[in-house]
Structures are given as structure tokens and as C-alpha cells.
Length: 69
Picture 1 (cartoon, rainbow, N blue to C red):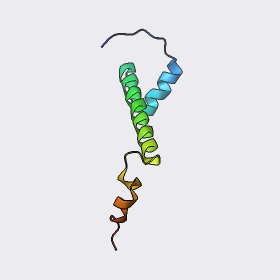
Picture 2 (picture 1 turned 90 degrees about the vertical axis):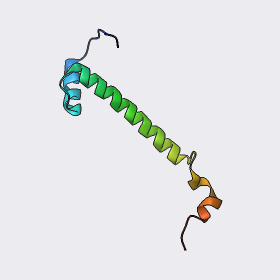
Picture 3 (picture 1 turned 30 degrees about the vertical axis):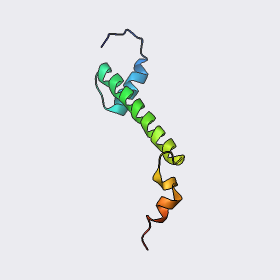
Picture 4 (picture 1 turned 90 degrees about the horizontal axis):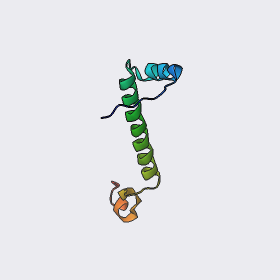
């Protein structure tokens, strides 16, 4: 882990701290990074479902036997 010097807009930092319920700058940045990665993963999941990528649901012969009569 390294140290990085960066100028941060204090109003933006305070707003993000309120949104994330964090106190320290380090915790705020780490939680924000994790949130960005969570949102990215969710978007990828939604895109895969929308495209039926890798889903057995796209296989008509398999799905024909899935429904109970």
C-alpha cells in the first residue's frame, strides 16, 4: 500500500462521507472504491442476463423439460 498526495474538494468529500456513513478520508475512499467495483459487477451481471449469455434459459430443448405439467 502506498501513500498518495492529492487535492480533494472538501465539499464533495463531506457529501460522500455522509452518503457512505464514513468518517475518515481513508475509509471514505476505500468504501467508494468498493462501491464502484460493486456497481461495475452488477452492470456486468445485468448485461449477461439481458444477453442470456451462458444461461440455460436460452436453450429451448432444455427449458421445454423444465416446466411442470
